[in-house]
Length: 343
Image (tube, rainbow, N blue to C red):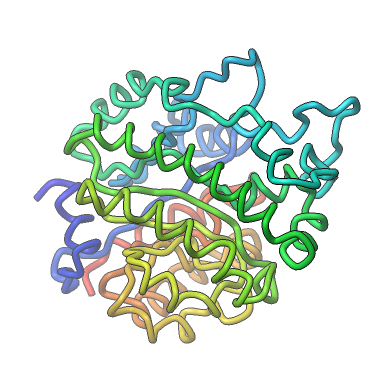
């Protein structure tokens, strides 16, 4: 059985523990890589870390395929038309003073021709028998937050909902077109559509569940539908507390949820266990406190506990994919070792 086959059994809700578990290392930060490489005596690359640990999963974010005709500008530019630069994600953006739908339509929305996925496909092919997560990242909620300014965005949902709806539709039109182009050319080279939007804080959603259902969920359904069109497993990344809309996402067709921020409200393994027949869980091992401050034995015990609650169809991983330099290498190794033990 290949690495890919073992992971697919979990994504297809076919795991029974007889083959052992599966883990995903996550995404060690650039600053973390040389630290781990020195301790393990390996090359200072992310791929060398994955190979050392025996990680069966690779993530290829397809956003690198975007080529903005406006040289050097991001996919969705929060500084478009502004005289002064912004400072931080919550600062006012290019839609701060939008008054009409025409103001929103004037933005130079991306075209599918601005994407060239040739190099992305080549990278995916290089991973052979690994399970690859891929696709455009599609964080429309976070992009819109930057383009309006976070406070302005949330207020506009109540005071100027037509502007939020217009901006969301135009942005998601562009993202759906990019996803369709990507997966049409991808074929069977990868099995999981992986995209992300951060909807939660440590304590709750950033917006009310009703606002989520009006301004966010319809677009989530559109993006998920592209993955389903091409027969892909659909996995969402969303940090923070989002338990209040998990049933909505299941109904929308979501297959897998990442990263399960373990200390956020409503996101503990015990609380999420009610959904384990509906979702595959990816993550769940606390990266806020346990990974940086616990011992390898603490990590192994937590892997056993979380897998017992959410398994067998769980992919063990940190509760945030970005592994920071304060996480001891021994703790990541302990997670990998314990995750693959037979149930």
